[in-house]
Image (cartoon, rainbow, N blue to C red; front, side):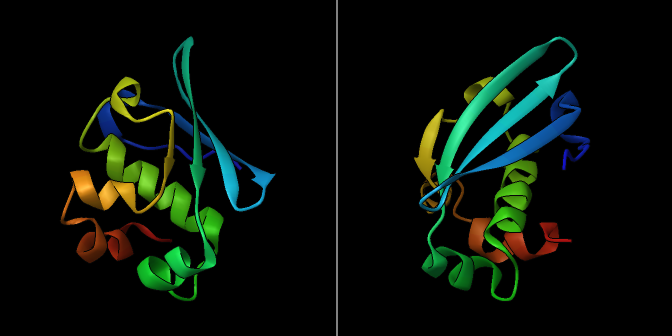
Length: 99
C-alpha cells in the first residue's frame, strides 16, 4: 500500500517484500522515482519497533529519512541499522513515525 509523505516533496512510498527479509522500496515524486532495497531482520524489528511489522518499520524509516534527505541521497541498498550510523537519533525517534 503506497503511503503519502510530506518529507521533501516525495508523494508516495511503495513497499514490496522480496523475500528473505528484503524489501523493495519505490519512492515516487511527480514523474521521477528512486528504488531501494533494504533488509530488516526480526532482531531489527524487535530493537526498533517491537510489536510492529517489518514492513511498518521500513515505511516509518523511509518517512524518517525523507525528512532529512532527498530520495536520491538515500542508499540504494542497505541493512536497516545503517540508518543509525548516519542519524544517531534514529533509535530514539523512529517510534514516533510508526502508525
